[in-house]
Image 1 (cartoon, helix red, strand yellow):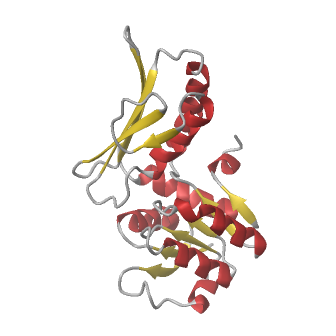
Image 2: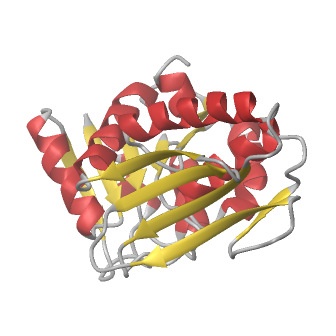
Length: 238
């Protein structure tokens, strides 16, 4: 399979190494030197594109893949206010989009645990739920896309939580997400339910980027030759 890498930073390089070991070919690498000049014709040489760039450039990159009729796997976060618009363009044009806030198999299992725990805790309002996410100092968006996904799951299950805020809060209707940027931390997410008598916490700790990169390559293998909008629930058959 020929893969176009749109975004060739640390994650892009990790994806490249895993793709090569799985027998794939990198047909295009897009980095700062050609981010504004790579062409649709270059994209057409790929069977699938993997997009890990910046929040500012992600949507244009996605639309470029649509124009080239190349399925695109998107790992960039920070542009989700435009997600519905992008989904409509994808389905309207009979294209393929695979989006996940996190491609790690472990994180997606963590999502399922988070959802189930929130469903249980809805019956125990004495426990207040809060979140913390820690990433490396180079991460451009806060809270992380993974944290937003976790928060939305909690809000869907816990009736008195109406929205999340990226700060501490004493408002019982708000879900606090505290974001920290420390050194080269790949990603740590913690959900805590605290009461006057005890607390329950679940945590996912990423040790490196390999889990994210492997998941993105597996997603690219899976979405090749498909049409529509997909995510990790489709891939993992949840």
